[in-house]
Image (cartoon, rainbow, N blue to C red; front, top):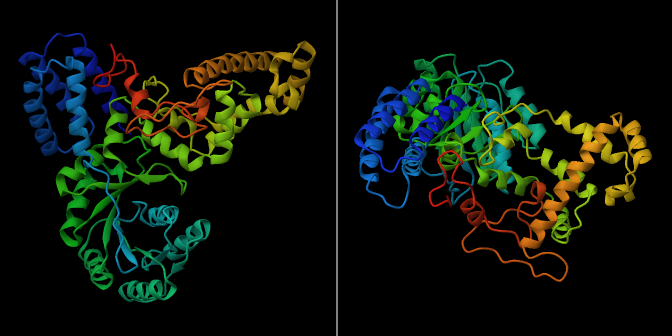
Length: 482
């Protein structure tokens, strides 16, 4: 999603790069391109008009700035507006003083409401909460059984009973209190389209359980139709936030960019894949950065912190700083990396990544030959790959089902990476007898063990790393060295 919009915006920035100042004609041309890009992305026409007007006001004044060059001014202004369009700030969940915190899930049939109920329950569980799900969708055949199946996968109980959905929701609230659960998620019925019966039923359920949060699940693939759905539900339920499903699809992204401006409610969570763990809080500023080609290092760090086993990561980072990074460490990091999600998706989070690689379909099976080669080596060979002579390489190739050329390529690439890691360790204050560096002021440190040695003990903080990104990257970061 957003690929087309991202490409158009990057092209706009490149067009003004190198100009000494922004003239009125430059601003007009940029705004025409931005308007076209947003309309092609299926953004609501009224939203486009409002956003372009705000960008114009800022861009005209921005030409007086002596700090940023025109391309950086454009990227800063558009980044601010994209962030505002996507919701502004990340929605922070405030839990009820008297549990449970009640969450009502609404949406049309086929939007992914039941699956996202389970995904949200899993997210609450990861926050240390004890959720209970209520299956109040008694109209769709097998809806409750689907919720029970998902509940078993994430070890979250499900309450439901046949009969009246409103009564079921009310009884579910009583059950949550009886069991001492601190979060209650109520999955309601949907329809293929909005009708009076649907809205009245979900309104009655809302009255019965008095939700602390009402989330509307929207299928991002439905485009502008999703905005109309959001308006209708909001008029009935007073929506607190939107859960955008299928955000990993190939839709143009207009719904995500329009819903906040139209109903005044932010995107709270995003479903980024079919698996239950492919679900995350929605960060408008981070998504804006991805659209503008600046990557999303904070999300990459969050994924690493969740997936990495801290003790192993710390040990690997210590060895890295001592210049002792081995093939065993490399193999371990590959295993940890796969826990962070599809590799193609991770590439899109990295700043400066060529657009050809963003969202690339990289199958984890492509890593299997590398794993096979390393596992076919003896422990000594993994620690000392320089001992790999011709006969050893032939043995490993035969044992791993690969070729000697594959083995040669892996060893060469690893030795180059090992040299780089050793230099990085020295520059960070590692190495024998060296002192570990200190965390920078106000920065968020990369977790130890991030692939290929990002961060770790003595590593630079995030702010320092971002400041070193090349200005030639799409739009550059304001203040980056040129």
